[in-house]
Length: 232
Image (tube, rainbow, N blue to C red; front, side, top):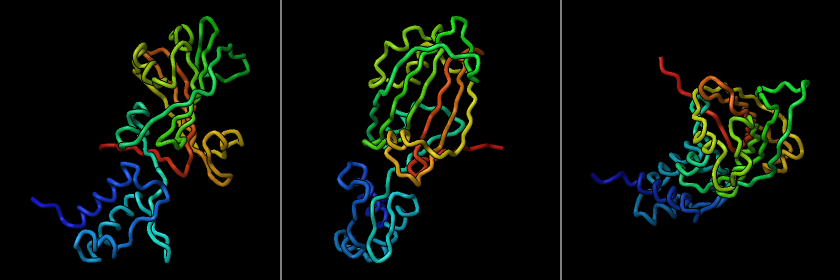
């Protein structure tokens, strides 16, 4: 069965975006140009564009034109997924930049969610990019006795979450979300403006009832959203 003409036009536009031929901010052809290209009516072309505007893929600017929207990543609040897999499932490229790796012993004054028999905690800070756009700054703390080779890993090649799952499978997690005003250095690392807020996600993960890691995940508020589905 042949697809409706508007769907063919919408698929063409999406393919241009998905293959990076039309980048963020690109002004797409007008409805008249699209109608001519696909031998369709202007109303059909408008329906195609409207469907992509409704999905947030395109953005209309009155009296100017229609443009490719900024990347707006989406993640599940209840289900924990590998961020690399999420990005790749959208047809985009995932890349990581490691900012720091260190070992420390938390002081008694620190309200730290991890307990450690030997007192050592590993910490790594990683920026996750989607199509070269920073989409998450991950600040991860790990109990040293649970992952003694943690700092030996190349976290520009494998995500922290994937590595930890391979040695201590996740059985329980506690997640909290809040909106924050980012610091100057956080704005710099996420490449966001002064007026943009951040989503801060904190997550403690356990394996077989014992805490393994604590993560603080920062996302640019204008490029990321969290969703959840609850069945009754």
